Length: 145
Image 1 (cartoon, rainbow, N blue to C red):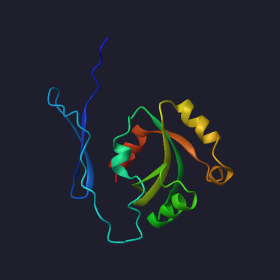
Image 2: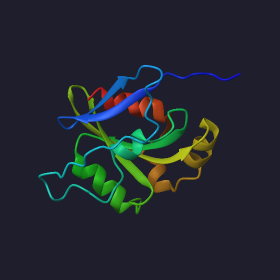
Image 3: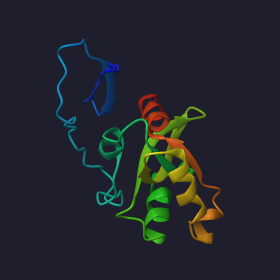
């Protein structure tokens, strides 16, 4: 049985990610092309995966969220200090009406895979109380910003 899933277009508008339903039959199979924005603050990481990578993930897959903080420089420092530059990604959302930055690790096809990876994390990362979450929830949270 072939199932048709709802299709959503992701694009950038005035520096914000926008999700928009796409009518059946007009689906563009190419990945979204987001215009990278160069931050004013040079200390902001351009070498760490961000929203574009997270949006391109299968919403049915899972990641391990490592940390959530109110300061972008702090999440970048966390990723660099733990030598996760080529493995982790971070994104901006809104929590308590303020900017919130979360770092996530991996792309696992099941919650079980994400949980196995979470349990194998070094103690330095475990002390942050990491948790497994779906890319669907991450993508939804990114849009709310």
